Image (cartoon, rainbow, N blue to C red; front, top):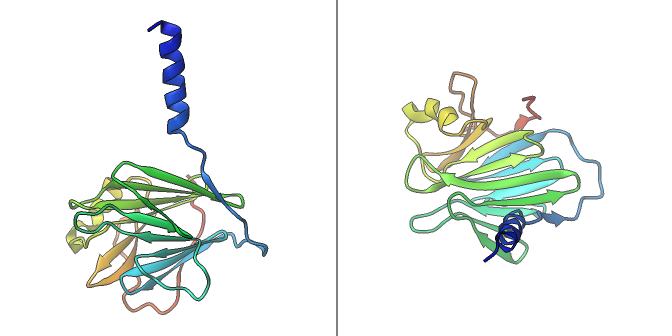
Length: 189
């Protein structure tokens, strides 16, 4: 094959790899600037700038934009939008846009053999890591090193999801007894 044909094939492959994000219809009401997370048994409900995500079976009174299921033994994480389901093998990413807010979901190798999910809202506004399995408390401080740039970890602890702010230097775990949402806002980088 000639150089021009090889260059054209390489260019086409690069374009195919950068698939356009899936666009969801924007809500009609005003968009809140911050976000919140509410732990719900083994899952959580995440709200951010018009998004509502249900993680690991959490149920909302409102219709969720997206359902995410963490990896389980022998299975990769999955996401569901309406009737469409996608599997996220390690090192894969899926990008969505709702209104003017982007959400990128990436499956990364977790601290154990199961992939963790990294949710990246906006233009690196806020990043949440969701390991599929529990992590020993003494390893909490290593999460910020393993997932650089993550602002919060949604950990599985004693059968419940708890929230651990990362990068602060000390472990503050929320969620086990929390009855109100954990609130967060855009992080300046």
